[in-house]
Length: 88
Image 1: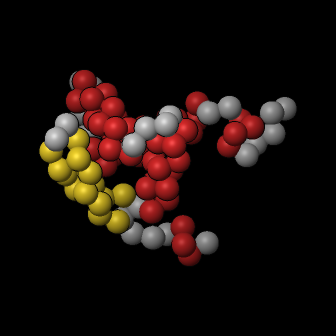
Image 2: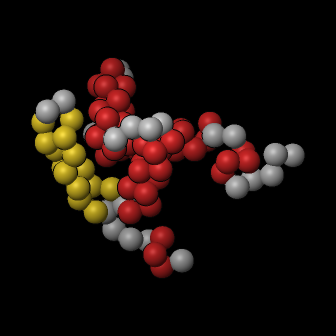
C-alpha cells in the first residue's frame, strides 16, 4: 500500500507546439497512459484534448487538476466490468 502514497512526478508534455511541465502522482500518469492507449492516441494528444476541454470551462482549473478530474470522470463512466466490479 505504500506505493499508493507517492508524491507527484514532473514530466514535460508538448501541447499545440508548446512544451509545458505537468506534475502528477504516478498512479495518474499510469491511468493517463492507459487512457491514451485505449483511444489509440499519443499521450500528448490526449493531454491536448483535455486542455481544450479545460480552457472551455467557465472556471478552468490548472492542467494537472483538469487531468485528474478527467481521469476520475472517465473512470466513473467506464462500464463496471472494465473497472473490476461485478456487472450485477
